[in-house]
Length: 373
Image (cartoon, rainbow, N blue to C red; front, side, top):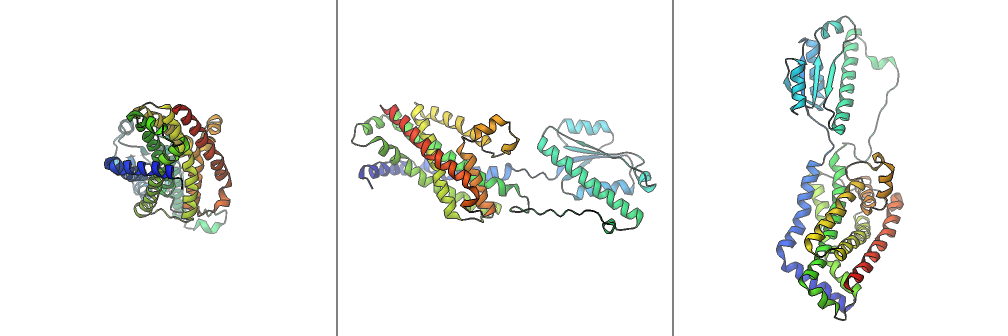
C-alpha cells in the first residue's frame, strides 16, 4: 500500500487512540441507541389503559369485560360511574379506550335480541387507534359467536362456511424488535461514519494542521482515504457489536449470510463517508459540521422507511426517497437478517448503492479538493 496513505492512516489511528473519551463514545453510542430504540421504538400495541362503564352488572356483561381483558390488548384499569367520567379520563390521557355496557345488555342477549355496546377509542394517535379499533371488533365478534353457540347449543364451526388460516412468514411472533433492530443498525452505520468523518476533517481545519498536510507531497485523495478508513473499521466494529446485542437482548434471528451483510455494508459506507466528506467541505467549525450532519441525517431516517412505510407517503416524497442511500440499506438489512435472503432477492437496492456510492464519494471528494484549494 502507498506509504503516504499508510502514514495518514497511522496518524489518524494514533489521534483516535489518544482521545480516549471520544473513542469510548464511539463504542457506547451504538449500545445506547440500540437499547433505547429497540425498547422504545415499538409498534406492538398491548395492554392499553381501558376504563369500563358497566351499567348492566350481570354475568353476561362481566363475561364481555373478561373477554377484552383476556385479549391482552386492553388493560382494564378503572370502572367509571358515568359517561362524563370516561370522557374526562380520555381527555387527560389516563385511558386510551373506554367500554360502555348499557343497562339491559344481559336481558337482550337472553331474549336473543341484538345487544349494543359502545367502545370509545382515543384517536389522537392513529397507529394505536387503528389497532385498538380492529381489536375491539374482533374480540366483540368472538364473544358474539360464543354467545350464539351457548344459546343454540351447537358448534358453529360444524355449519360450514369459510375458514381463513393466515400464516405469518419471517416474523411469526410479530415482534416489532425484529423489524426495528436491523433498521437501527443501518442508522448507526450512517450516523457514526458521517458524523465522525465530518468532525475529524473539520477539526484538522480548526487546528490549522490541514494546511500543513496540503503543502506536503500527500495527494488530496490520499488525505481523504487515509482520514476515513480508520472510521470504517470503527463502524464495522460497531455493526458487529449491535448485531451481537440485537441477538442477545432482543432475540433477533440472523437467518442470512453475515459476510454478505458486511460486504454490502461496505458499499453503503461509501455513501455515508461521501456525505460526511461533503459536510466537512462546507462546514467551518465542528459545531457547524454537527448541525449540518443532523440536518442531513434526520430527514433521511424518515425518508428511508425507518418508522413508517414509504408507500404511505405522498408521491413527491417517495420520489425524493430514491436519492436516500439508507432506504436501500434498510431493505438489505431486513432481507438478510429476517428473511435470510440472498443477493438475488434485492438486486434493485444493490444496484442503487453501486451507483450512489461512488457517485457521492467522488462528488464529495471533488468538493473537498476544491475547498482545500
